[in-house]
Image (cartoon, rainbow, N blue to C red; front, side, top):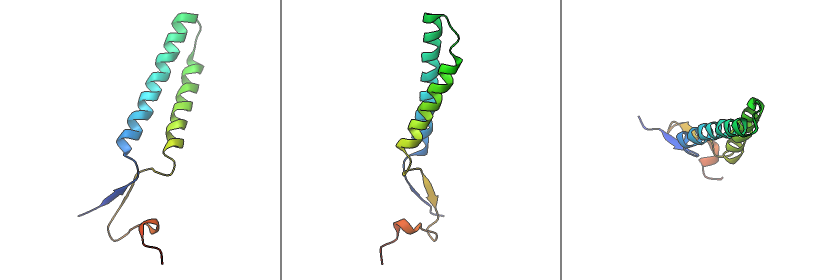
Length: 79
């Protein structure tokens, strides 16, 4: 059965979100070893900021899978 997909690639969105979380914890680890303080709050806040940035960047382009007999109205011709 055929199906159609619109929007950005879901795998790319998830990979970028995971990469940003790993980067946030890497920055937190670096800050922790350089400044010798507990930076869990920094890691959590950087992760939150990174995931929020991914969501905002893809807000109107999240992937959408639909069946050929159930086409979303935004893809139908204007009347």
